[in-house]
Length: 449
Image (cartoon, rainbow, N blue to C red; front, side, top):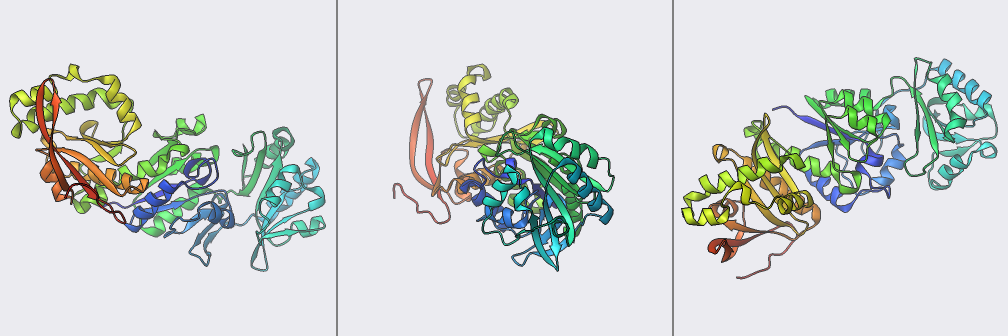
């Protein structure tokens, strides 16, 4: 079975606008990593900065930092790969910065110690903010002159200022084929631009490809939001842009997932990894993905056919007719609203919809329907695995469900406990179902005994 490496950008992608990870994302990712999912991040941040904003996240794999200039592993920050700036390119950058009146932040290794050098008397307002926000960063080292500023083994430059101020240096340096040069707006400080300069070999894409090969993964899925993530996505087999991504990245991506404010990466991973985690070697016949509004008509038709052909084995013709008289009888506005509001996943094979399920924000397992031709093939198991993982992410103590006679054995097989039988009215007919619940790890089950 092919193993997938999942690589996510941090700022604007995995992180919230508050520059942190949501509790939901932390719970989901840590649980997936514990289950063996190969997940890591690729960021322009240093390891010091990345460690701060990803506090609480389990890092079982090496991480890609400084836009791919370094790959490091473990708490001891063992360097697996580094890409230094060529000496002639450092000299050229120094000349260009001097001519433009720019004093950069210089990231360098001085006698084997990582340092960030700058000249306080020449710092821009942006550099001053950078330094002030990192008072406990042991890498910071103020210097008094130009010679000291460019000492050591330089691997990265950052210049912070206005776009027009930085543009001439950007245009001059981007002609150097030995360099990778980025100029983009700082997402947390509108109007402020960062000019970042590194080795042409230092890219998220090349670092991720190196890590994929080292880990023995056959496929890569990447997530991003900014211009500097485009090469990373182009290197990946599956390309995901968060909904808040810049237009150019959304265009380069194969699919758009929920925004960083909606835990888009974690939600995608719950669905995408569920078949493999739930079925092991039996996985591979279908995939699980997030719901899209254009799925609505197909899911309603699947719902109708499942009730009339699968549930008919446990309910009378009159009961299934009352349950859903026709596809046209389904309230599309209500269904569309609830499927979009809930965590909804869809099983698909070569464009054919095989099943779907959804859960609300309380841990209530609302719908679960599987195409008649795919009963007993792991579709329902995969959907349930994803939705129960969503409940874990919510921090819920339990999952609740109102199971039909048909679905009751399935849920019992997953450890759900029946609370009571009950009846619901549909078109004047009473239909029997069963209130059931699954106690999650760390939670206590409450209900009828």
